[in-house]
Image (cartoon, rainbow, N blue to C red; front, top):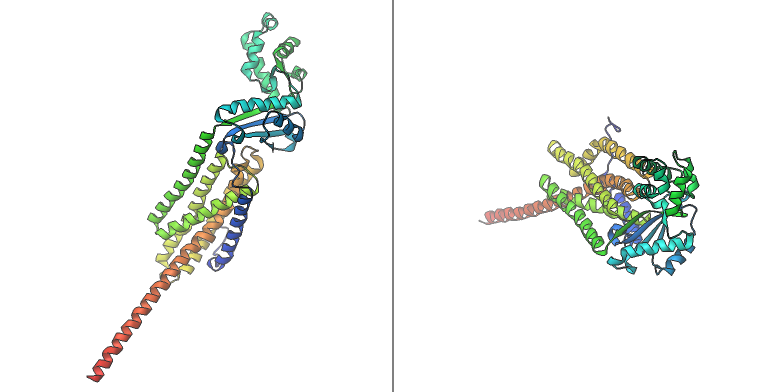
Length: 409
């Protein structure tokens, strides 16, 4: 399948336009990183406590901040999560205000602040209870045991109750136990058993992540090492398979891709998490694969087009692989775009990185890596031509000197 038939685009003549675009995108991203004082690390890398909370109604962030201040958590961060209609907030407690052994205590203080603002008793919030916790309370109730229900039936009832709570439109949050009457098998005795032990708050803690400072620092080092070692291995491989300048060109193009991708993450105010690092490594693999395809065609055409210049050979090679590039990159881009649009908030950073990366990675293979190889080869050719010209002039001088000596003799 071909999208383009015998294209004759002069890519190399436009290299200065490509360089200008790359410098602009890189500069914008770097300025954003400088203004924001570096990349915004996720909980995986910075360490701390992050609590994901869902509310029944849109919460007042000002009231929530005041409550966090009263618990000594004034440096906590608040971030809306997902669609605004979901009423979900991420509360982050950075290591600036905690020690590693106090991280779980930080979670407790956040929950206490939530209760202070949005109410809730000291009983366990049933919106956060598991199937096992629910089943244990049903089994412990004497009236339910005497009603003839077996342990298996109560366990199954607990499972149905939690499935009902977690399914849309409730999505993990009910406003009262009366809503559970819709579940098959629920009787007043079941509701009373739940009310005796549990409460129903206007919020629920969906998830809690706790990462210590040592773990976060170690993950940052490992992520950086993985990225650099990946690039170094590719440099060695490409230099061995082609020439060293091909390896250098490919790695410079990869650095270009990573800088722009991280810059766009900063512009979009997205966190760099472990999934984003996975996306960056995926981007590196995708980009270098596309670059190698073009380099391989250049190597073949060097043998077939012996009298052509390196510029002609490179343009011909890029044009010959253009349909393949459009097909593979286009289909990959559509896949990651669908992931970005429909994959949800959890995959937002991962999919956004790949959406940007696929575009930039394809662009850099044509506009960055190939022109670097051409520029180096042209520089070498000029040096060789200059050396040959000098040798010719020296030889001419010697020949003229010999002729003069012969005439005098």
